[in-house]
Length: 210
Image 1 (cartoon, rainbow, N blue to C red):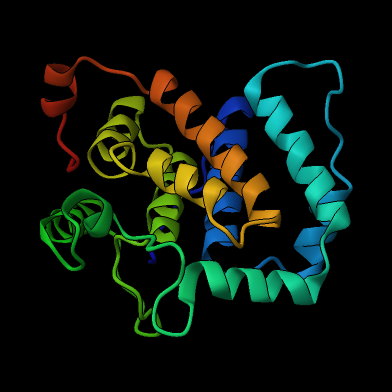
Image 2: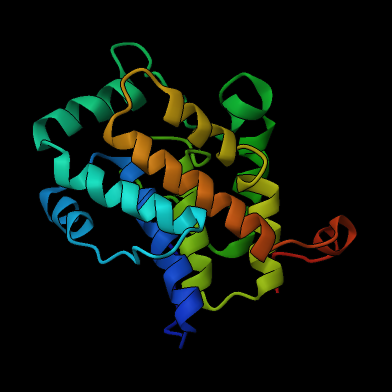
């Protein structure tokens, strides 16, 4: 997906949120590059923190240190692609309806158009792929979208199913490194659901356009 993102001065908290969304999106789109793996392996983590996010970061750091690049590629392919189908089906329509290319995808496409996102020709997967939705959240934060607008997109399109996807990822037979990715994803989605929490009527009253 592509959109024009204006340069914004973000708070440290929002900059971190945008980075975490982008990181999870990158890891769900393809296996990590050597550069990304080295970055994750060398992260500084607060050893004294006991919250779930801190524990997830430490788990991911250790998983990156122990990972072998060739094994990671095989792990990703088995989880997300497979010969006919991977162990995971990372699409909103699948999780919400049991089938691909259903109403959740149509609703998402409508909202993406309102937000000014355009599909790039080289992108093959439907827009309700988990990586796309995580990228959109990262872009909204970087764009300086209001908390309310972020909450609308998150509650409509990501929160109803992303936590379950990451739970399934954690329990997938082939998940080794990706069990750590799953732990971070689960913790972050829970954190965001609290951070962006709105009364249902308040969320529905906010429009994505304007």
